[in-house]
Image 1 (tube, one colour):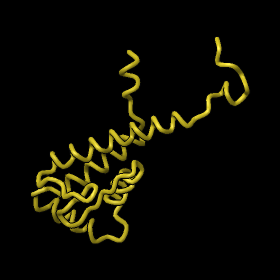
Image 2 (image 1 turned 60 degrees about the vertical axis):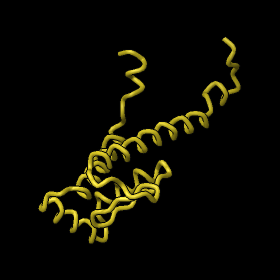
Image 3 (image 1 turned 30 degrees about the vertical axis):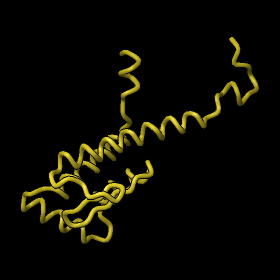
Image 4 (image 1 turned 180 degrees about the horizontal axis):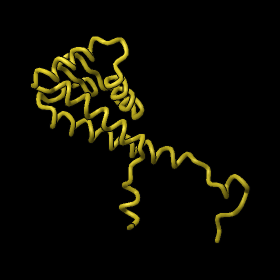
Length: 122
């Protein structure tokens, strides 16, 4: 597997969070009456797993995502009326945010050779 492809592999945790966020966007923006009814039930629940997990995934990358009845806001801006453009916008933010967090985390990690006082000179 080429090195570039290997870097694009996602963790199961990331895929799960992305899927839950996608489902929340889809349900929020759907025009199907049955999905709208299910979404109404989700928005009135005290602890909605779908909404909570989507919001949590975005909070991990310091982005604010809020859901109300058929309204979703990302960073204070109302998302598109259709679910696909809404999801593309959210997914782009999620992907970019995760990449930035990984880079930030990697830069903060101390190399094992540094921990033991070994030289990096080879």
